[in-house]
Length: 159
Image 1 (cartoon, helix red, strand yellow):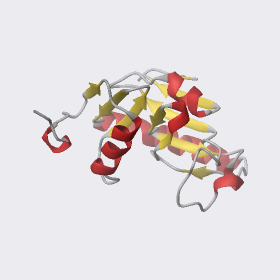
Image 2 (cartoon, rainbow, N blue to C red):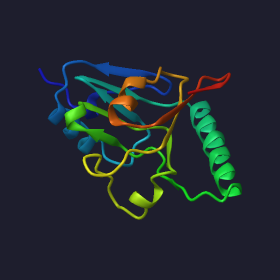
Image 3 (spheres, rainbow, N blue to C red):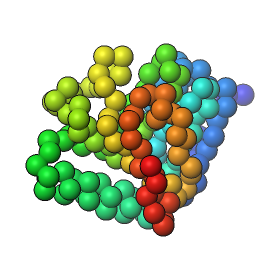
Image 4 (cartoon, rainbow, N blue to C red):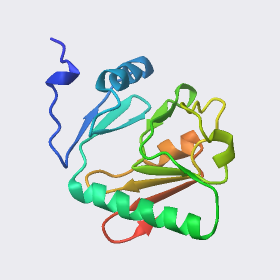
């Protein structure tokens, strides 16, 4: 018996881990779930994680993202915020959807692009993760070449 994605229910504030997922299955799951969803997806070496964030999660994401934007604007630094865009690369066997992310140093290289392809485009310079319902897998960001990751755990930001 096979389960279909529309049969799975991930309650808000919980995560679902599925082992033994191939790269092509991961890409099919992303396509099936579509862009207009409230869940976040993470994939690393055959393990797929589906997370349904809490409102507290979204509030933290917004506050920290706004702080970064204000600081960059005040410092007159060009940036491009891509929110929770999916970043993945088959040869790294990893994919993430940060809670928020920013192109700062590499902003000019990706400005205005409809799609980011990590085989030719640089990864974001800064990714932000709100670790309330799950723990960020730092190695996914390392594999993809993201230079800085900020993780907030209700008490402080760690990088």
